[in-house]
Length: 620
Image (cartoon, rainbow, N blue to C red):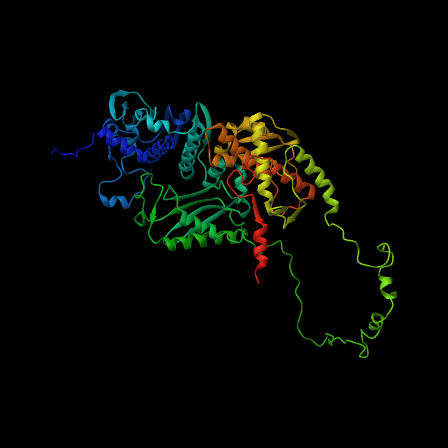
């Protein structure tokens, strides 16, 4: 019987390993930028085409490589960072495994041009799918120039699963921002298809945050600074007014490396308990510095998950640091007794002296014979109605003798107009309802032959508006209400890129938007019927909802836009509706395709049958 176990060829092994490191174009950008930082670069340029599919080019002015180093850099586990196992726990650099370049070259066509300052000429190396194509001596500036072309050209299945150009570009921007945020002493440039996306000069950490995410965030940053024996924390957290439910900017950096850590993120949120509404979160940009021997960064191929020694203690320090900053900058509610704005309280002289007049206790006089019931009680004991009639002078009485008033339907003033609306809709195939009642500003109760129907008014309105906006998108028309004064909208880089891709669809909904450059837009028109809503907030929330779950299909994009608009425009819980409004809402709901659930699956209608009600009251 033949042996069945054999060693894989290097090309196949490299492709398998590449699946852990190179998941999409943004992974390549991350690895090459980190290599540039490790090389001591003070200027890094990232140029991409077609969302990174056809070209990813990273140019740096770092130390460069010799001819031998340039060739060895593409071998698996070739690294200058570690020589023995103990070095893994004393790392101060980004990359260290020696897997990045080997993984990239296994799934792409790669060209490297590099030169050291001491060398007169540089080296050019060309690979294609782990195979060396050429190695030449060329003239080149100091530093390294990586060109990664046709990513996944030799793995069609992987290439097929890449998302749209916009989605891949958003991922590239996200990785670019993570590296650029923490390396403030390095100048960065990002370009896509020859168009500048982001240029970041050398700056402070706070200014770098503002340069990336816009000037608006600067007013909401609260500085955090703590130095302890276990950890040193520096950075910023957002003020309570910057809290929001989704799309929150939250960044942790450990020893200059970006990381995700949900446990520490909860410590930050704990500091804002009872300060921000439940379900909302604040942004934060926190840099943690710990001894390299106290962390393990070698637990995940992308090195974004890090294990800490004594995490509970660090959790308490982070919580205390954020709380201390909120108190120090008067962010949390409280009284500041040291403020200069509080007027000085005048001092009072309590000293005793012969020249001061003696003070006697005040005297209170009263009539001991007074009885408040003595005069009033007899009036109530009168047998005639003269006393009560005085109270109701000028009030129109019921016609005829005094008796129980005729029974009047409490909904009489609403039934006629409501029935007119219902009859009109019924003639068009609408839903026929009995007179309606609103319960606690949240539910609409409808009496039916089969029982009592409960309708969630906000969800019902979301369903109605969703179908309205979706139809506008497919019909490519929407009523625009021009603004007397255009509103200025400032967005982050990723939000700006997303907005530019859905500009046409937003115009179908009724938005009139023009770009002013640099992530700034002019909002000149909004959908009709936007009374009471902030148009800038509405537009921002719509863009963020699309950014969170990007989609390639036009139908899915239309549904996401329509649902986001509907949620922003729908009535809020607790809003009192007139009876006619409830009638129209109920009938419009049952004229939709799926009236029982919202587009995202939430229940709208629940009916309690007559038999259930009868069983309840039948119990003794």
